[in-house]
Amino acid sequence: MGAIGRARRFVAFKSFSSLTRRIVLLNLAGLCALVSGILYLSEFRAGLIDARVQSLMVQGEIIAAAIASSAQVETNAITLDPERLLELQAGESYGPSEEGFSSFEFPINPERVAPVLRRLVGPTGTRARIYDRDGQLLLDSRSLYSRGEILRFDLPDPAEPAPTVFERAWRVLQLWFGRGDLPLYKELGPQAGKNYPEVAAAAVGVNDAEVRVDDRGRVVISVAVPIQRFRAILGVLMLSTQGGEIDEAVRAERLVIVRVFLVAAAVMVLLSVLLAGTIADPVRKLASAAERVRRRIKTRVEIPDFSARSDEIGHLSRALRDMTGALYNRIEAIESFAADVAHELKNPLTSLRSAVETLPLAKSDTSRGRLLEVIQHDVKRLDRLISDISDASRLDAELQRQEAVAVDLKQLLEMVVGMAQDVRGDDGVGVTLAFERGPGAPADFEVAGHASRLGQVVDNLVSNARSFSPRGATVRVTCRRLKDGAQIVVDDDGPGIRPDALARIFERFYTDRPHQGFGQNSGLGLSISRQIVEAHGGKIWAENRMGTDEAGAPKVEGARFVVRLPKV
Image (cartoon, rainbow, N blue to C red; front, top):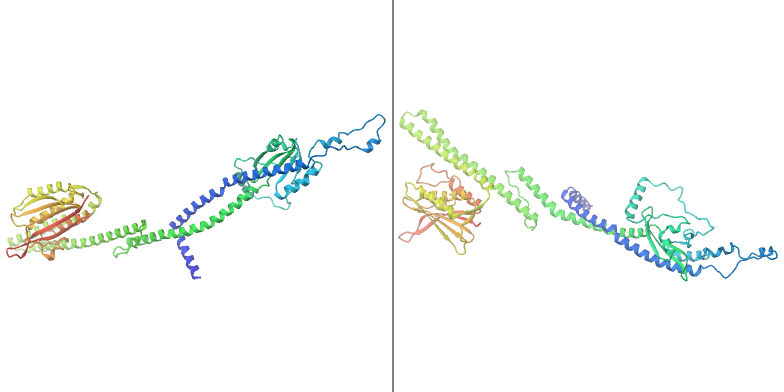
């Protein structure tokens, strides 16, 4: 009972899946189309008809030969009426009258042929009719009708109800589908035998056959062979199948096909349900998890892992998991960015508020001047923060909307470094550019990306290196073409980076500039650079250039920023 209950729940669960229903119905539709074509059985039916025609033709020739050998009327005897002889007068003669010669008009004697016909045709279930040379019916195996006898017809049972509208419609459909291009069979009278084409052909000595359908669409096969003796045609034998004989054979074959179809349909439904289970269930679970992700943003929802499958479901699962992970990372980044922005904006606003509130209380011009300097400093800091925050906030959307194109790093770096050299400040720091090509690397310096944003990265790194370089030093920019991409290295001769700050300098709003005043930098330049490089599928990191002093002890000779970009 438990197994039956589980099976019922399984079927009920599957029945609500539209994908399962579609798979089952489409598979069954294909099977039904195939079986419908097989059930038509046109070739099988034509083969049965041809075989039956040949069989009836052979059977008719055998029966016609038997009738011809036994049905000949005796011609060596003359029948005289003795009473007529007694009535003769002198000089009168008496011979066979017209009635006496009437027996010579029909070479087939129905009384002698009927027993032979009954014995030969009875076991076969075939209807046999014998016509004379003029097409008049002599014998019919259905009633063994002969001249002078009453023709008997089997009338329907008076108690049998009249066919309903549906039964009549079904008969019309049967006639329409079963008839095709076959003529309709009609029962003709005893005197109209030659109206059957096959009888008319057999009357002149040619075997012929006709295939017709009755009023119910059942096939009726008729063959006619001449009954002849010593090349003299004595009559015509017509053999006809019972209506529905061929159709019964076709129906039996169809019944076998239907049985096979039911078994195949059951197997196909089972296989379709199992196939749908491997498709619909994972898709349903993935859709349910995606719905939970939509409703629950603050907590992570785990997408079902079907990545072990090597089909489209596994690919869909991996794509949804990656997309969900990226979505959660983006949400967390936005939350963290919003918190950092609020914190960074709050500091200058607090300082600005204090200065504004203190300004009316200042009594000397010197105090008011210092407060105005603080206010101007905080306003500039707010303007710089808002500009950098605006640039960082629209960076992701801009990179997602734009299509990556081939960027010539050589041309880009020459332009950026040239601009940096043209705007050399009072510090006297110069910028140099060099290009190198690694072993097996292509001749060009092209990568896939956005030229303006990559130029922004190089400009940020050069500006950062110049701000840490001593007066008169040189910032060296080197572009190396690698086999699997390109690498941009920016070296300076500054104090280097503290070990504990190597991993933090790319964080938002992080600054470590003891040599500059507070609030002179927003701390978003390197963070934006990392965001751009990672959006291009690359990596960026910082390290110290190590050397040795005069005593051989290791020392920091400067900082180095490395950008690795993939190839086109």
